[in-house]
Image (tube, rainbow, N blue to C red; front, side):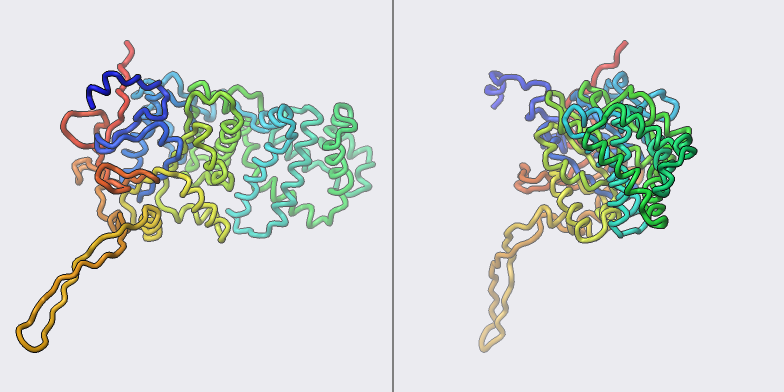
Length: 492
């Protein structure tokens, strides 16, 4: 084997077969494996962030991936700053946060892409539709009428912005909606026309897009359909969007990040940049959550559109349930061909179900989890997560001895029979006894690792991976999980 390796052509830096990680310093996990997605489960304090997350992040950083990072805890940004420095990528970090001077006007970005692709405002409207849907679920509202009505309103306000060639923002969209006519008579009122932002944008649209079908439909909506609605119906539709979504982007802290001229965008990750959306949910609340969702959704669309797929990229989210959308399942079905690694970490599968309720939501969650082919389970107290993990790996045929004793006449006799049966490769209760690191465990963490379609060298589709929280570099004798790519030497 060693002789063959001498004549083997060296792997290219981003070859699918290049190893990123060696589980237990033995089993390789490759660039190609990373494109099939990663799902990490484990209780708070189980060691998943300090081991699995850190090892996977380090391996991708050293391999030269570009990426997007979403944050939930206040310390997440500093953790990534440290990881970038430790792995020679400090110069590639872009920290998108308050006071950074960065702006990603996602509405302008998607409207321009839509114009280039002949999609109009479709993708920009879809992003806002996702936010509206999530806000409605979070408020416990299940009536789809208001969501659909708000989505229609958003689509028409975006068409006005596009036709008028205004710099779009949620703050401007909110102003247009709140200044829209409340009755058919008001549309002819000179005083209203002089004061209404909605009317001013319509006038600019008429100048720029006269005769365009999409603009004509939007104009008809705002000047005829909207003012003709019952007052209660109209106010409910408006509140569905402005109160649950738009208001989060109108503050002095958040508006400059999404409402000005774009100077950072998803395309930057294709050049090797690591964009850290440093608006942690624990600090910024719903605005931070929506900011992460916007970035993730736009990156997903950009990944699917890109033509140069040379450099691999990743989307990385700890506490990922905060950023779950209906589109995640669909995106994951094509992530591999687009050379995008999705790495999601959360405590248990129940977190997903909570944010995606109902039978349809449950099906989407299971479909997405099944599309994340590498699964890592740290210590976990949730029975449903443990059962799902065990069921996903499956069962195998085993032979168990059974003893039969005969106490009839004469001397008693005993016979042992071997009975074939099916049993789990990994028993669900195994995850309750995994090591969680820290001083009490001499900084040792264990987890069950499985990769769909792979049999490990032990003849099983799963292994018990061992981590040392203090070190992830290859060593001669310990069989702990390591980063397969050497750590870059510090620059002088």
